[in-house]
Amino acid sequence: MSFLSLIGVELKKIQHSKILWILLIPIVLLWIPAVINADLNFDTQLEGISPENNFLVQSFMGFAWFMYPASLVICTVLLNQTERSNRGILKMFSLPISRFKLCLAKFVVLLILAVVQMVMMLTMYFLCAAIASSIQDYQFILSPLIVLKEAGMIYLSSIPMATVYWMLATCIQTPIFSIGIGLATIVPSVLAINTKMWFLYPMCYPFMIITSEMHKMATNLGTFSYKLFPWIPVAMAFTVICLVISCIRFGQVEGR
Image (cartoon, rainbow, N blue to C red; front, side, top):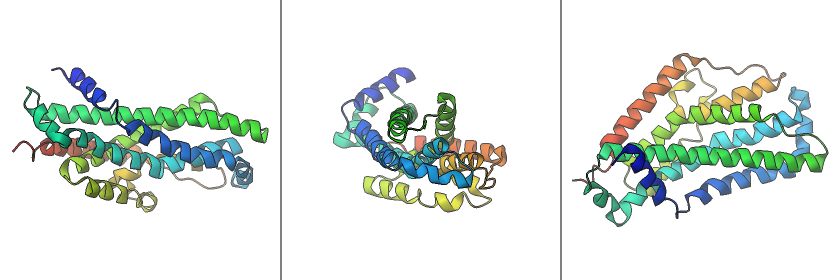
């Protein structure tokens, strides 16, 4: 079975699952307060950030800090459980399929789910910005290129974080522990981005990106920049190491 065919099989497995609802509900809950409190965006002009920029960045900060990482944590566990329930993974191993290839296929599905959630986030932004614009009689909708740039940067920076969560899900057999540890790693992101060694903590990458963008938009808040070196090499190292560990550990217990 080719790698692409294997990815297709994995996507079919989650067609009737509740994963898509898990991705959508947090985003809806995130944007409802943004629309209700849209008038508060006019109070931020003292910081040098326009209401439309603040409308975008505040919701994306909440998304990048907690909602998005938490969704990845839950999705990694659910993707693993599709195999562990009813000994499904043993059935897969009975086929001429590489354990490593199956692990990587599931990780690609995780990245696809992350793209799906990002599309949901963008769709809700434009919908809610249009509603807020109508209510407040002010144009909150930014250029699609600006919004797509922010979403793309958050997504790309989250890949190392996704590999860490995938590694946790494959190494920790008990789902509740895997979810608990994964969620516990989200909170320190606020502290990590304020240290010089932030690049050693992949879970803070998306939050670091959007926080830096906020400071670029808010002219009176000062700078909050980041350097690509040593961040990019470290991020690549985390990605490779975590994927290798995941491939080694995936199905190791069931395959004994």
